Image (cartoon, rainbow, N blue to C red):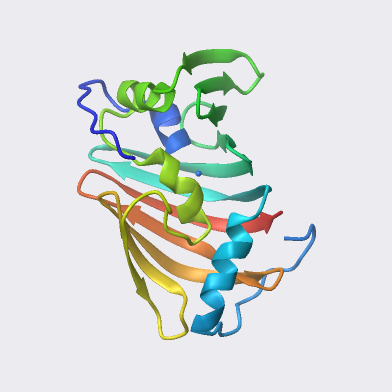
Length: 208
């Protein structure tokens, strides 16, 4: 579900990127082999069945005159999401813990700086920090190279069957590069954009 936000507050360089953001240990990353179209359903089922996964990479964001880049860690454990962001955003390091009933933001020393609670916690957080709409719940699926099963989507696939372009909830998600991880083709470079913002995510490591 996407909430339409109408805040006039300026984008917080550190916190805004935290949400614009959602293998076997030591497994080497390499270009994926062609993946038959028939395997896409099995791939989706396998990824949706994961209890937990995490990634490390880099993110760059541009929203009007605001923007920045930094290192990104995303850890998904069931319905709980933990996002860590560090780098030249002017804020050192930040951590976002997010579940269906709360959003908590902590500084690099672990001190809680802000907290939102209730069923609309994510909406509150986005409204206060971004001032524009972002389908935060969908991001955990987009990072995996999947459409959000809870919303209508238009998928465009490459000749090898992999997802190339996803249009969902007012956003266009382009998958520019994949890598092979534990027998699956996983996104390694993703561009997300709409009329208000553009995000580029480069993933260096997947693990589950």
